[in-house]
Image (cartoon, rainbow, N blue to C red; front, side):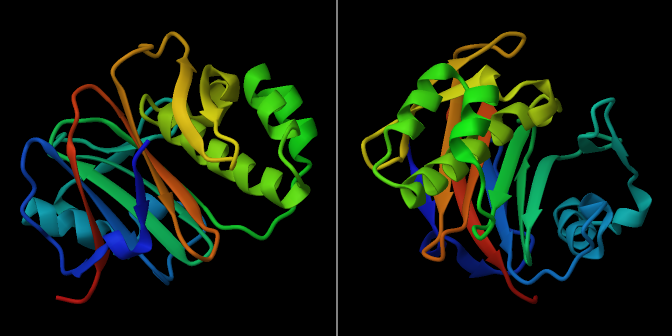
Amino acid sequence: MLTLAASDFRAAAAPQPLAADEIHLWWLPDWGGPNRAAAESTAVRDLLGAYLGRALATTQIVRGARGKPRLVDGALEFNLAHSGGDLLLGLSRDTPLGVDLELPGRHRPVEQLAARYFDPREAQALAAMPDDAARQAAFLRLWTLKEAVLKVDGGGIASGLERAAFALDAAGRPSAPLAIALPLVADDWCVRRLEWPDGAVGALAWRGAQRTVLAWRKTEA
């Protein structure tokens, strides 16, 4: 499973040329946005508007039945996630995306949560980690992958965390999808991990053909 590091995000101003077979992933550090309605924030609307070539005020953002934001006219596919002061935004021409981001710091009852909500194979792998720190890190990696996959169709974690399961290697790094349950299609999934030196982790997921992922760190124009 490919992993993007902080160094893979090149400083750039939006927009960048977006080809039909590309996905652009934007990292907005210290974006300063609200804790709610991030899709309607100035930072996100400005970036989407740059790609659309018009003021986003002329394009309505709505939410699906399960809360996923989208553009009414379908001019772009996008998804986003934020944690702490950081925000990630994924963009494509016509490929629905799921994005997640989590910052470390909050201690979680990993084994109890995994036993209740994760695939049994994931729970067993987490229980076999050598110590609590390793379990915490591996749990967060799994969580972001699951949420990214489940956000593609708008369901999110409420649709069942066990529906997207991943194998863990001995170091607690997800190595491959074990299963992605119906009604999601079980094959043809593409997933990218994100991992920062400070322990922040994230994920990008989509269903379908391989795409070139270009990663950018937003700067002023």
